[in-house]
Amino acid sequence: MSVTEVIAQLRQAHALITQARQAALQADAAITDGADVFAAATLGSTQPEVDQINHLAARSAEEVRAAHALLGGAQEIIDGYCHDIAGHGIGVAGGPLLAAPATDDTATRPPPPTGPPTTVDEHTDPQIRYADEIAELRRRGAAVKPHDVVRAERLDDGRIIWIENGDDDSGRNHIFLPDRVRNFEEVHIPREEIEGLLFAAIRSGTVVGHCGRDRPVYEVEYLGERRRVAINTTAEGKIYGANPISRRRKLRRDLHRK
Image 1 (cartoon, one colour):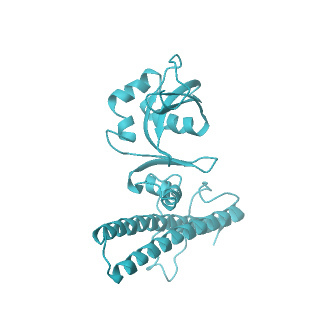
Image 2 (image 1 turned 135 degrees about the horizontal axis):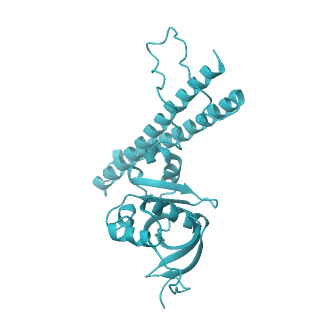
Image 3 (image 1 turned 180 degrees about the vertical axis):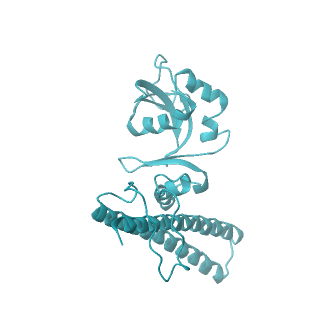
């Protein structure tokens, strides 16, 4: 078997593990949601079976999260193996992929991928792309909805910031209401760059003041210009509101109005 064929098999294995990690994340969410429903329905019960079931639910969630982490470790090993034999990681194109030769277990093996390999970072499903960040947020007890996450990022200081679709009152859908999008476009931030600006501001911007009731204003270099944007986040790091701010606008220094 040639190196190219080995890499093709490694990529297939990596993609299958990605699917398994997604399944583990979904299982974790299902267990947690089921446990919450059961706890609410049995609140105040003195039946010993209730405590036992709650304990089993907690243990199940812990095991699923451990499996998710172990699968991530397996992907790192595969990536390292690929780098050792081919000089690049699993997500780097290494020439045309050839299907592995037929063997006796062809009938039981899944078919080889027909397109370029999909890595976690390239996956279009945010629940897969940000699986590590979502799992970490859940371990911290953050109020995150995995199926609603649009984007997440781990900062250099270890904090995780993220944005969910939300609704008209909070989250991405709130920020992307037509009137608010026009506000950004008036300061030369097109719709497709709004989300990037928010994350860039929190990641590398500087808080230069406050506006509204409690909204910090960040200043950051973005698209070749100094920009100011007011962003609301929860204490856990979820972005739920934002609007552009003119650099001519006077800001107050304190968080809250006096």
